[in-house]
Length: 131
Image (cartoon, rainbow, N blue to C red):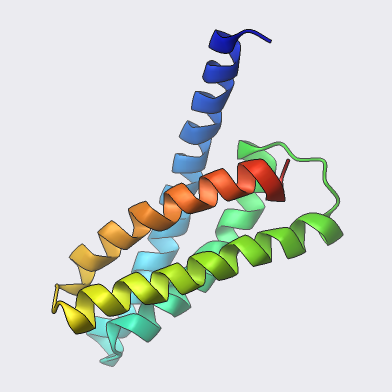
């Protein structure tokens, strides 16, 4: 496989991963905003609820559309859960730092946090979960 072909495949995977991320983010942000604005929840626990729901969407769509993995569910699921758990912890950490320590608006904090966790997740899922 040439370097150009490898790059094109990686670019295609990242575009698919981004598209799946948009779907997962709609679920995540929908719950975050609904819980904060509608139920008066604090942004940190609200974003963690959204993260878990978005993670379920992400697993199903990434397995099929991004990585086209043939790894059995019994193996891919626990690997996905490990990567997602690290992402969950990163989400908690960054949202806590941004909203509690720095007093940033929760949606701006979530946008930055989403970017950080997205990069972590793409690399980890490509290299380990669905490899």
